[in-house]
Amino acid sequence: MDLHWVLPDHTIRETNVPHIHKLIFALEVVNSVCLEGNSYRVVRKELVVEEERCYMAISLAYPPLENV
Image 1 (cartoon, one colour):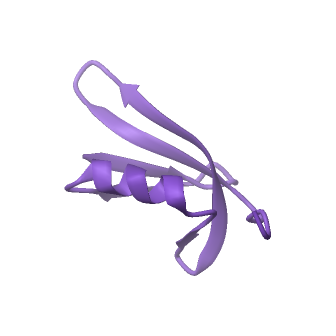
Image 2 (spheres, rainbow, N blue to C red):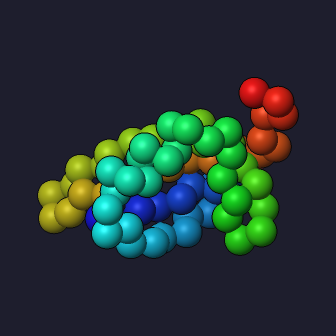
């Protein structure tokens, strides 16, 4: 499944994840995500359905919450 990481500045990084359920599970058990060497916290997960395709969009914010 296509995955869009939406960075705090609204830049989008696209990747393809073969087993999206494994990623969703992992996001439930961690406090932050490191992408391109920067740590972010996940603020929203959304399934986007368009006419010709669907993809998962994960919105990120910084800084990550400490000691959560």
